[in-house]
Image (cartoon, rainbow, N blue to C red; front, top):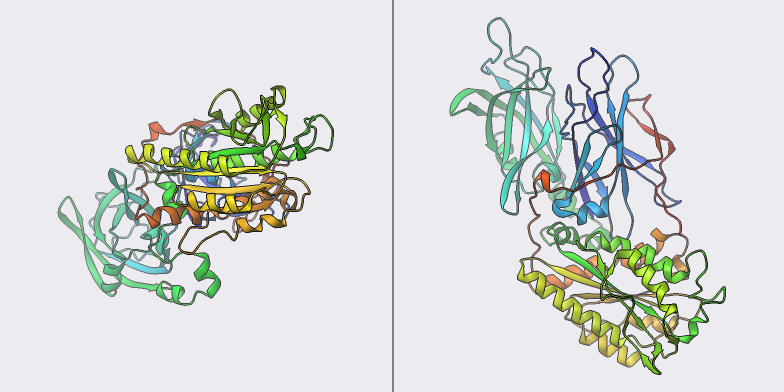
Length: 560
């Protein structure tokens, strides 16, 4: 899925120096490396905002994101110095998955040195470009006697968030000095940013008189749409302020290219990879606040071996065993979409009081505190009266997770919200009763649940292929099997393989029931939790302003 990233900051530290006024901040966005095959790369830089410590940048950055594949970005802030080296104003790092799962798809970070940086993501919708060239004609002067205004214009997109409609600044033109009939440069505007692909979406055009201190004066405004601008190409539009005419804007050129044409020219792969325009995606449900809940189920059958002996799958040594590695790679990604980050954890295939149990609680409480709580509870099991046994049965943990998933959805819907659950089963061997497992998958298919099974160890898992082929005609495919050893190079490789089907399964569940995504929640700045600053290992070469490159560091890949 393609996302759009926008940025603004508050109360940055002034690094301009004594008697040199206020800093002119800009931001450089770098996508950090999360695996060995993709080096860090600079995505671009924002425009420079003059004389302010609370910049609101207009530049939007495009990001590709898939659930399970970590995407981390570093935002480096600089003060532009015209004669000399640009000065650092701090930096912050954001996880794109965490942004998408946050309330309002917005998070904030403390900036080392002072200030707060805010980041927001939204789904990128629409294809094509509007090429727009406009000219002002006889604008009303706001400068007074013997001086003329320095006009520039801004474009604002109307955003309908839950409970409110706002205008989002998406473009700023060049400034034309001392001219009441300014001829602005031609702009190339992505329709995804300008109007979300909706050419009839309201757009506000505001013309300002530029002031060096940043307190620009409104000269007039008008509301329009992309289709209206195209229709008025070579025509004119009245500029008004407080109901009075303040000049004319001549639309010299307004042409759209690459919209319908781009869709028609998509190859077969693209048509299957992306949903048709208008069909909701995982990003729509996530940004609308749909919570992802995870239930973990762990295999304690005897075939895992004695946990006290090195080399066995449950061995409790100084490092993580493969069960712990799988938990550490997958659960944190799903936690980002869960507001309370509470994780139920079940065990199966062990004896308690002489009886084999196929769904027993792990830990002291029904819900554990995130990944750390799951790992601690897992290790504590071997201090209990558990006797590892068999056979390998998934049915009870699947039924338990399905009941919980349905209950969570009903509770969420009662509050006008949405919920979906992922059952993560970790096992060392093939399921004992294939027919019973297939029947259970059919039974729970109508619940808001996906089942992901990770095979740990070197057993022959070929018989587990039925899980990927278990979809009956007309039913959702809710099960996936992944072998740990095939994706054990790093956590990112495992999580990507494990979670790749979840978005399609989630969307399929809600769409089958006619449940549309909720609107993105509108939240106030005071509701955004500001997270602490963190160290970022990244160096940038700013010597060539046209091509900023990574000169050192840039890795955010975590090992096991």
